[in-house]
Length: 187
Image (cartoon, rainbow, N blue to C red; front, side):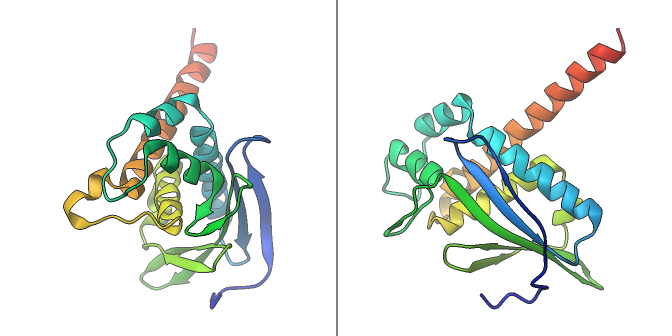
């Protein structure tokens, strides 16, 4: 794959329920503990969001641009991991993630395992919240599924729209969790 990272896997986990969309990640040696925790939280949030009826209903209703697929075909492609002419129906995103540390900042790198496509991140990714990072990973996964975004309608393209929706739903879930926790302790 041309990856410039350690071959030693330090985390190999799958998030999500059986029979639903899952995120399978491999995290490689060289990552700080805080980075691993945040990436695990982001992948948990991504899988949780994509398993909801709310997300499904949103995908089926949203006015996507830059694609000739129907909303049902888009949803099926997202859930089934259908890449171009290759159909992988394990309902799982398989991702290898590592962080390259350098003097300009830590750069998160993701590789989607089915074809070795590598998406380099930015040095700011590790400053993101887990919810925003979940949205970023969802965006990159959409790109890996061959959904494109033209500059003229980027906000309505599958990668941008799905990434933003994933982020917003993950933020709402985190807020609701914090609210319910606070209500129990601060009556």
